[in-house]
Every structure is written in C-alpha cells, then in structure tokens.
Image 1 (cartoon, rainbow, N blue to C red):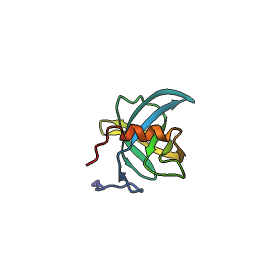
Image 2 (image 1 turned 180 degrees about the horizontal axis):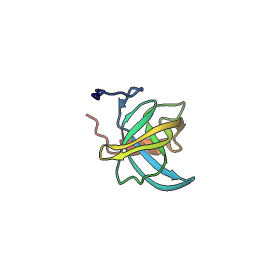
Image 3 (image 1 turned 30 degrees about the vertical axis):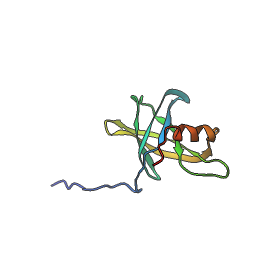
Image 4 (image 1 turned 90 degrees about the vertical axis):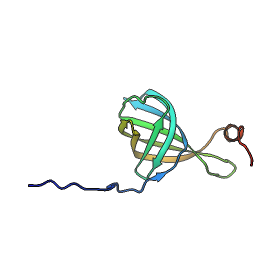
Length: 123
C-alpha cells in the first residue's frame, strides 16, 4: 500500500508575520528555570514562533511578554502576555502553542516611548 504525502501548510489558524520585541520565561514545576529575550517571527490565534537572542532551555511551559504597538486609553503601549506549551525549539526558532493570552498596559509607557524613539531618524 503506497503512502500519500500531504503537501502545503496544514495549520488551522492563519499565521501573521510580525516582528515585535519580547521577553520570555520558561516555567517548570511552577518555578522559573530560564528567561531571556527575542523577537516574534509570526503569530496566530493558536501559537507563536520567535527567535531568541540566546539558547532557550527546554521546559514544558513558557510565558511571553510581547511589546504591542497599540494605544489603550492614556497608555501608548500594551503588553501582550501569552502562556503556552513549548512545542518546538530548533534552528527555525522557538514555537509555543497558546493556552491563554491577555493584554496589559505597560507600567512605564513614557520610558518605552523614549527607548524606541531615542535613536529615531526623521526624514
């Protein structure tokens, strides 16, 4: 009996290529066993693929804090907080399957604004 291969992307949720700064925490047995920073590669309603600035330790759970370029009331930036399970950690990036997410206003929006635009060049 011949095996048939399925070609193409079989994901259920559409992925959106977007690069945003993030910080992550690896959680194991309710303890933080690793942390670092990186950049998102793509997002979907089911998961996130990101590139880390350093090696990401394997652990069953991961929490991301993604700086989101949006306005909420008087707060110029939001933080997208994502919890999920680590499903892949290889040369293509770190992938997680989301279990929950929510938005929070940044605690220091003025500092975030200055951090982003300090070296900006206006043309």
